Length: 530
Image 1: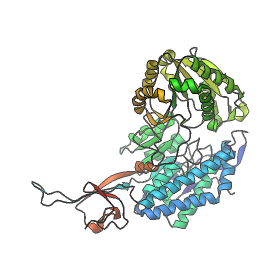
Image 2: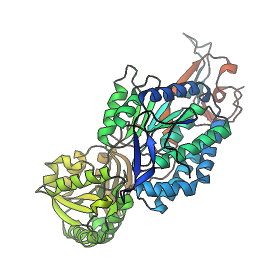
Image 3: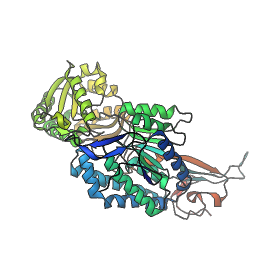
C-alpha cells in the first residue's frame, strides 16, 4: 500500500504546511515509517471555501445520484479491505476481527443511507393545498421539505477508527443529506484514515462528483479543529470524543457570530440496574456477562457498562464474589494510545485513593511499555456514592463501579442523581416489573437507549436506533448519530408558499413522479395530486 502522509483538499493530495508526526503502534511503541503532515490555517480556509463552492452543486443532486455515490464509496472500501485491516490493526492494537467487523459496519452504514435515499420519503414532505375561498382570509398553498445545511466538519473518534471516523456515520449521513464534509482526523490512526479517504476520492472521480465534496486534514484539535468550527462557511459539526474536548468545540460553535449546531457524542458511564428477582436467579451469570461486555475493546466503547447498581443482600454478595473470582483471570490489553492509557491509569489511581471505595478485584498486571490497561473493579455503598457524585464520571477503559443500595428506594435515589447517558440497562424478571415501572420514568429523562437483560455495547444499524442522550452523553439530546434519523442533523425544514409547480423540488410536485409517501391535506398518500 502507498501511504503519502498528505492531506486531501479539493481532490488533491497535498503536504500539510505545518508540523509532521508519526503514527505509533500502541502495543509496541514502534513508530510508522511514514510521517504525516498537519494542515495550517490557510489550508483549513482553502478546504472550507472549496467545500462551500461544491455545496452549490452537490446540494442539488437527486437522492438517486447521492445513493449511487454512497454505494460506490462502499465498493471502494471493500476493494481495499486487506490494506485497511492491516494498517488499522497496527495503528490501534485492536484485533483483526474487530477491524474487519468495523469496516463491515462502515460499509453497511453507507448502504443503509443509500437505501434511505432510494426510498425517497426521508424528507417527510408535507403538502397543505390552498383554500382560496376560505373566510375571512384565503389559505395559501404550503409545502414543506428538508434541505441540506452546508459544509459539515466531522471529527474522527479515537476508539472507532472506521465506523465513527473518516467514512463513518457522521460522514455518511452528512453526504446523504447533501452536505460536503471536511474530516479532521484523529492522530491515532492517520494511515487508516488516508486509505479510507483515498477510497472516497476514487468514488468521487467515478461518480463525477465535485472533488471538494470531501476533504481530510490532519492537525491539532485545539488549533485546527477550532479554526474549522469557527469558519463562517461551516454550517454544522459532528464530533465523537471526550467531554473536555467536545465542550470546548461546542462553545466555539455556539459563540460564533452565526451559531451552528454541534452534534457531539461526549461521555457516558451507562448504568446497569439489577432488580431483585433477576439478581437472585442470575447473580453469577450476570457477573460473567457483565465482565464480557466490559472487556469489549478493552473497555473503550462509549457504551461500555461503567456502573452496576443493585440492592444489597445474599444475591448481591454472590455477584461480588463471582466478580472477585473471575476478574483476576482477565488479561491486560493495549489501549488505543499511550495518552488514553495514561489517563485511565490516573483515574484508577484516583479511585484507589478514595477511602469509601473498595477494590473488588483487579485483572492481570499490565505492561506499561505496551500501553496496557489492567482491569479494575470497585464497589461503594450507595450512601457514600450519593455523597460523592463525581464518581459518575466516565473512566474510559476496563473499570467499573458497583453500587450497593440499602433498599429499592435508595436505588431509585441513585438513578435520580444521575446525569445523561447513552444507555441504561435493567435486568428484570416478571416479578420485577413493578420495580422496573418505577425506575423507567427516571431513566427516561436521563438515557438515550434503555435496554433489558443486556448491555449497551453493540449498537444496531436500524431506523429505530437512538445513539445519543442527555448531556453529557451528547450535546444535542434530540438527535441520534446512528440509524437513518442521523441524516436529520444536517438538514433544516424549508416551506414553499404559493410556488409554481415547475419550480418545486420533485418531492413536492403535484405529479409525485417518484411515488413518495407524503402527508397531503393531513392524509398519507403516494398518489399524484389532480
